Image (tube, rainbow, N blue to C red; front, side):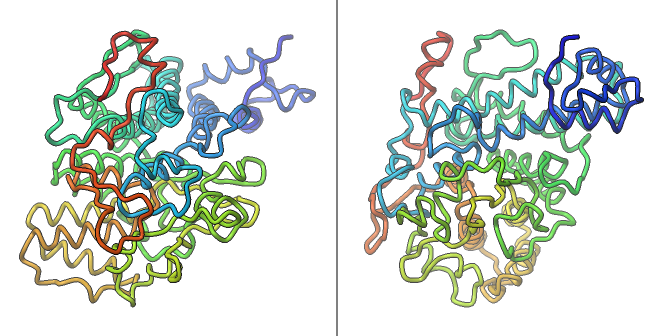
Length: 472
């Protein structure tokens, strides 16, 4: 009998969900093709089968290949977060080392590994989501409520992947609707595709994530892309589109009922404010090739042992009030961050999304719709747990003043969490590291809409697909 190695979780699933006919007591770590076929043909077991297989997809967000990856500056989605934050104005890298070219805004060109790895990460997620849909969910006549929940999870993963891709490889939505975005790979698409427009990509993002919200579940599992995750990324997409009514709607869904209190530790996936992340343990940690190696000064990684610190821009730090608890996220003597603290064995969890992100989008949406009283009250409530409620003017009447203050709070709160570059692009704000007295080591000024804020398509994709047009 030919055996097919499958996920251990699926072997456990067979034991807990099916009759003893499917079991072979001598082969507990494996499942035969016959057993797998029996499981996938059972509509009550199929959702659990798909979720068991999905664990490999979620692992891709941590690192694309645990076996062959030898780069210490690549660790999945958190490396995207770190590289793009370093491209902006609010994060300083104190020495030229790993991520040094990102900090110098010199790591975007087609032959470089950075663009190749980021492109491959998200298209691998998209391909996996499409494969699951074709393999298990292509027949709408067999769709059950339980399977719709699973499909919602898959489309959420696909939608948020397109959100990252279109923001990495093009300028923001507003004003660039007809610009070239990224290829839209969907079930049944040909192998080679031209770049869809930004508008077309966002239409697919909205479609995927709306399905995720309308059919997804609210779960207590912070490792899955549930309804809240779909709603949060949908709010992000609508924010780039400046559709503020929908930002308000979906940001509220994402943050409703979730703590937005001051987080005690930003490396624990079971924190009340975490919406989505990945649990790290002594088996899957990538040690030096990890987010914490590069950002945590308290452990013996690149930051802690070699002093390659990630510091806050002093001009941003100076705008944080002394009674704001968040000011303790940075060391006063050199402004190196202490926001992210892992155990010494590099087993801190990866946090991809906190409730603070959609909550602040909700506040922003209220303000942009002219609901300044409600917006100020909501922001005051948020900042109260950080000791900075006194900074909010409840009687603000000028949208420009409120917008600037809200943007400041978002920059402080989400520093180091991978939102800053996309926010700068949608806010249409320049990057200026040349101001007098700056602690930036690389002093550059980048205008709104600059090519420096957009990755080139990887060279091998251009070589293999003649339908693709390259970015400047």
